[in-house]
Image (tube, rainbow, N blue to C red; front, side, top):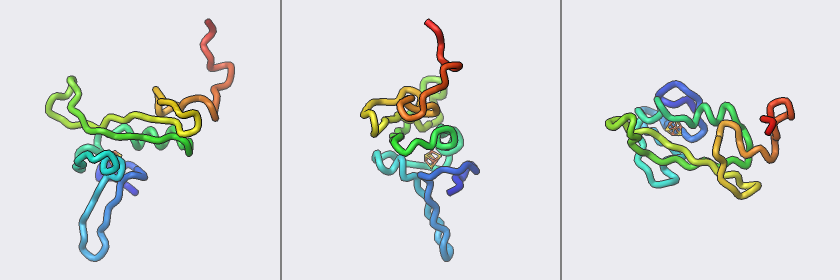
Length: 109
Ligand code: SF4
């Protein structure tokens, strides 16, 4: 579903049926965080979902105020791979287990 910021996000849910107007973020709801529509503007989740469609990737969202933007709340995301059971440092790329990079992209040591 399209977020108030105009991006596709599978965690956003809006109910506008018969005059209703309830919206929620099910990613933040799952971790007990309070959602507001402004969070979607800077949220990294839509771009992560666009870059990485791995079925084993589990995202967890929290709301924080980073030091660089003291007044604005932002969504911070951590990722976990259900297949290899470990944290994923770069959710846009994934853990590399199912979809390894071709040798041309590996850094030589
Ligand atoms: S805050 Fe992020 S995860 Fe939640 S609905 Fe908005 S874009 Fe999606």
